[in-house]
Length: 234
Ligand code: SF4
Image (tube, rainbow, N blue to C red):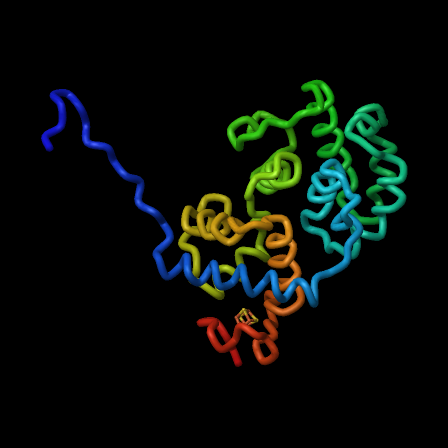
């Protein structure tokens, strides 16, 4: 049928993921959820009682730090601070003291304090879109996804080098060096967590990448995915 005069044909944005990519990512998600049930780490912020405040705050602390290291300061820190309000009312120097055992304490204290200051002056709510979160201080793509995942219950990937490594090895490599801007990797990570339980899928991915699909010495010989993984060294 001819288009009405003056109308432009709609331009479809090409899907970066092939059908094969989607099938592999779906298979990987199912595998990871099964693997996590037996091998997932028990970390305090994964408890059913942990709040969205705790989980978002922890993601700020986890950047460039091992989970076990953050777990050591968790009981004291979240015993003292139960909400963003508590942090907003606290001098940054006190926050720094809490973060000294995990390093980068000044940066972490400033980030947490900036987040607390913003959310407490906006009625306790974070924006529910990446565009809105771009206006919030101390929020890069990773923390924005953590807020959308934990605070707003959206299907968002905690895409860091660990998730990127596993997805790239099991499906295919990205094209751009920076994971934040590679459209294929962004879509692949989003597809990975699009099932019923995006939170557990994220945790399973990070645990598997740090226990089996290690950066320098992947344990392909004992990896249950090795028979179908193109990057397997087994
Ligand atoms: S086979 Fe090796 S490279 Fe592939 S997912 Fe397993 S550990 Fe990673």
